[in-house]
Length: 169
Image 1: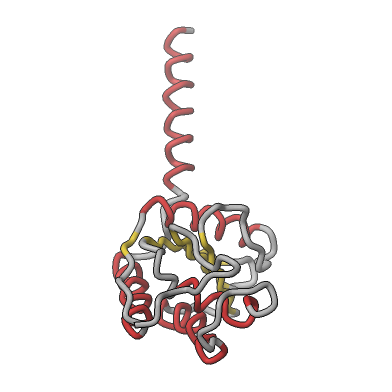
Image 2: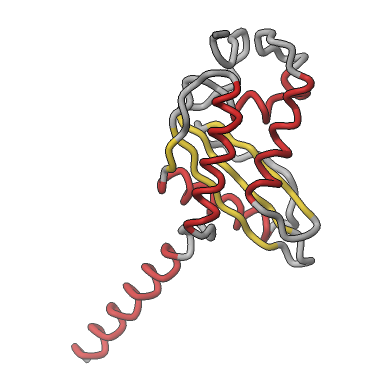
């Protein structure tokens, strides 16, 4: 009896650690480096410091990407206190495609403060270049029909109403 209880507890511990390990970012080291590089390219264009990779943010992003993939791959933001960008594609995507898609909103941003009425037009871009943001972490997941969902979390968060994303240099 004592042996079977110990065996059960050992098995339970393995299952718990296996399932939490599944929440690690599904991105390769090269994909992580590419995400940082592309974000920092856009940030350099406006003269602000680059971002660093955060395993904690990546784990949170991966959990949310997994949830979205299991929930029909809808574009729905989490209730996280961090900043968040979400990307959906009907096929496999690269970090370059993902981050540059968000950054294409730059053409809509004319240097104004963030407001409730203008945020939707360029909020992904302004999160990428939010000056006070220092860390990013991302995850991706496959949906049942082969679609792909990407989530990037940012800390500290950006896109505060009434503020500029960065100081003009």
